[in-house]
Amino acid sequence: ERDALGADRYRLGVRDFLGTELDLEETYAWGWEELARIRAEIADEAARILPGEPLPAVLAALDADPAYRITGAESFRKWIQELADRAIADLDGVHFDIPEPLRRIDCRIPPVESGIYYLAPAEDLSRPGTVWWTVEDPSGDIVTWTVPSTMFHEGAPGHHLQLGVTTLNPVLNRFQRVSSELHPGHSEGWGLYAERLMDELGHYRDPAHRLGMLAGGQQLRAARVILDIGMHLELKIPAGTGFHEGERWTPELGFEFLRAHKGPDPDSVVAFEIDRYLGRPGQAIAYKLGEKIWLEAREAARRRDGAAFDLKEFHRRALDLGPMGLDLLRTEMARS
Image (tube, rainbow, N blue to C red):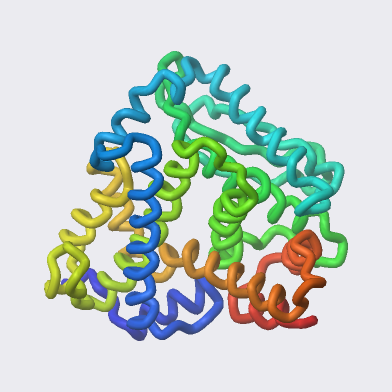
């Protein structure tokens, strides 16, 4: 039995997870273009850190550098708490008007393996918004050069502001306030937009932290666009990519491709990712396609408003809308 679902069933997944319709082959080609752009930026950033060294050597050097290691879970928790606090202080009143209940993110280490994720504040505010960050060895070293972009994605200006503002918004009904997970194109697109926004605002002052953003979330999410559409439609791998050119995608090629773009995860984690893509067609592309819509909406507002464009006002309107599919988001953000 084939793992690929084909174009018709894939379009149903896109409608479900993104709330839009796509030209799938055009989006597949865009994924390759986006990945090439990101990889060129990765090469440039790596050359700033260790000129003349190949990328694997640069990544290994950063992993081994004591300047980018923290020992112990509690020390790491305090460090990410400082990152979160500083981001809110820098953004509030300048690029966002952050409601008082959201001016604090609680950063915690879970007692058991549970990944990295954000939990919105309780509706009655009895519990603050929380970033949970699993540490594999609570007494060992944690590598930090990849961490800031993830904190911006999960915390502020990412999911903490997006989900927090939604939770507090009295204009939205209760279903809207708690349904963000039903719209991953909107929510994960915003998280990826937040990573890039902080780059535009100069918050990756250390080249290693900017490399972490590019080689982590940005590269992986672009690779997912290629993989998800490519595997389900069994598309050909184009010439000039340097990867099995002319062959059609299979889960085995997907594993090899993801292995090269995901970082030092165990093979079991990579295999799980491939199975997830095959079982949830359209979900994996939500991050990059959602980010694309947010960026296009901002650029359209900038063109429409000209010198009067106000980034803080754009963000206010964006977050006040609450969760929705990407077609509706595009329509609502186009209203003057």
